[in-house]
Length: 312
Length: 140
Image 1 (cartoon, rainbow over the protein chains, first blue to last red):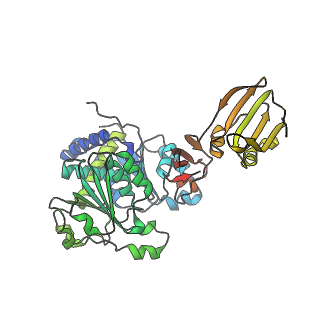
Image 2 (image 1 turned 120 degrees about the vertical axis):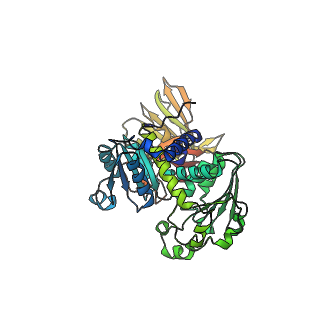
Image 3 (image 1 turned 45 degrees about the vertical axis):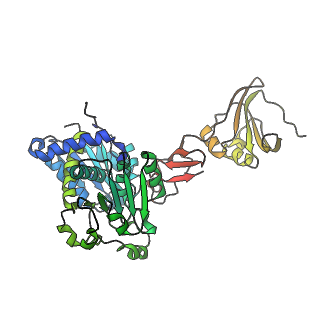
């Protein structure tokens, strides 16, 4: 079978890649993970620019580590919000300028749809590193690669999402990508105020036949049946009102005791950073794989960068 | 009975929902045209009970997407030599550029005004559109 070509494309939405294209990236990520030295110079002479208009540690470092491990170099604007934007420059002009210096752009922005707008003005591949509460497709790439690695498949799974499902962009991206696989069942655990938006639910239902979506406010209800538990942080930065945040932030805490209700082969995932939603005692449980998930994300991003640049 | 002469060359917008005629007349900027133009309101209609109509003499480049959005039930009759040579119902357009504003305060189009909002039709029955940028659904 021909390898799908991703060269020169943007990656804005988790559905921008077909399941076959994801599979192809997983194969490459697996090869890179097995023999990273074989790929350590495939991006020599290439420059990746990162524009993070929102704070980020993990995603930015993961991208930078990925590019550096491929032998490329990185241009970073540490805080664009206090540089060009402060002078009144539009996003379009920033992108046009940065694209003239680099071969690839990664952008994170607090406004929803920012990456899609930026892509309209970018002659080089542009990757969405998160746009407001909407999408975080490279986290989806990471999450799918992690599930595939640990479960050996992406179909016939019961996946429980827990926490902030309203503003959690990692959830919005991942659930849509998973919905394209057969036999999926989703358990949505959240406070009433932070339920998965209707428009996302509609998209999920439209993506796959016979998808089961169950909603609950109790974490215990979803634990026993889940193959994957996807925990998320209640995000302070997404609330207009701090009182609401304070009321909801400790809605769910996964403890060793609660984990005893779960299957032996459950995997506990988290896009990180974790605040209070997973007790530190859970880290010792072999089902807690979130730090390995972060590492797998780097291999997956290496595969993505290499493919968008057409070097692997 | 009020009578308006037939036109030789032009456009007749028929089946406009009664009461919407003046709004459409204004949106199309017809008051500033030099050619004869008529707005008829509350015209008896066997199909609609009452309807509004607009008759425009002379050539006119219509924005059918906007027309479809303003009143999806409208009929556009193109007249030449006093006869209807083409008839169409624009209906709701599949794609709308710059005519609908996104109501999501977190949408990028609320701050980057140089880029016109783009919407695609997702549900014809509910008259629901989806913002190309943020994915928000709006009803028109």
